[in-house]
Image 1 (cartoon, rainbow, N blue to C red):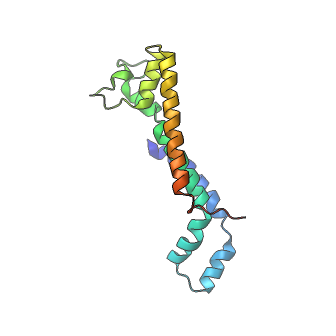
Image 2 (cartoon, rainbow, N blue to C red):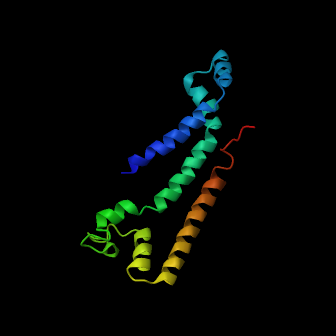
Image 3 (cartoon, rainbow, N blue to C red):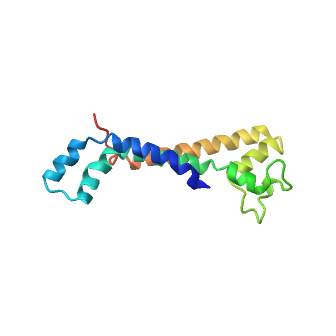
Length: 141
């Protein structure tokens, strides 16, 4: 089911690729650069902000998986309680636990604290990706 969301990233990549000036490819071809060199030295640095954006969105999206697991686990109209994570707690993710704490157990304060922890984890991974990609993301003027 994750492949259904690939289209969004591909549209963003396509927009980034269309923003690369054609003159750079022509200059590199005249200088004798092969297709791999053109990709490595022109395309990749020019679309690095797009790669970075899609990386951040992927990190956030992967930590907030909810709907697919909730439907598979039984959901509201199903027979099973999603907090059980059946079979063998294999579908019990952090977001499912947060949801069932808030809306099945009605412990809103604890669920709010869980949401803050999720926010802090997402912010940490975003910060880590930003620090790691700091030298590799090139913004053109």
